[in-house]
Length: 232
Image (cartoon, rainbow, N blue to C red; front, side, top):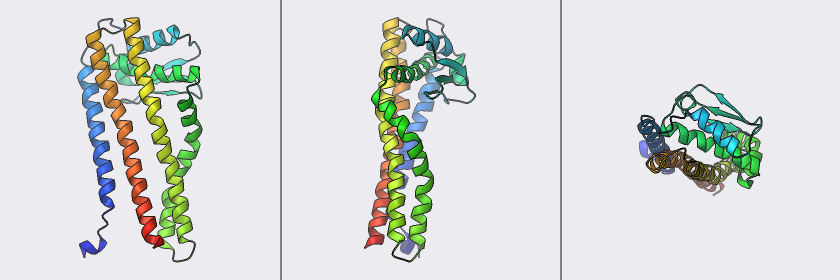
């Protein structure tokens, strides 16, 4: 009975989930390790962010505290850079690295970095696609009519926009990290040894986006296989 219901495409979902779990564990361990390494400058994440923004000629971005752990982000809609509990008032190498990374996004916005603009334009489409995709696919799988494949294909198309958003996010995040490391090195805010620690933290964080994109692609592949079977 078990083998009758077994679907080999579940393996794709499992692989995606494992990749995401491994990436999440890696970023947490790296951040925890370098959160205990105090920067020689003694600057906090907030101070580092404000200095980077000023040095970049950006004066209209507000730096604020946000609750949570690793909930740091930059919102281009209202030009607010939010730093989490473990970054805002921390003077660790990890905190300064994360703050600088978010400043990288603010700099991208100020300079009109194309991938960031594309990602921003995809946000509403991706959100709608991720919300409506599974109801459409389930409807197509449950109904027995000529319209079933239409619903399935529409669901797959909607889900593909969410995956596209994850893929476009990759160059945005990598570029922000490169900007952060370069700025921290050029300004002397972190020394060579400290920069190595920052690179490890930001590289680990980048892996979460890579894993997320990989998981999305694997899920999309699974849906295409299921849709193909139904079409047959």
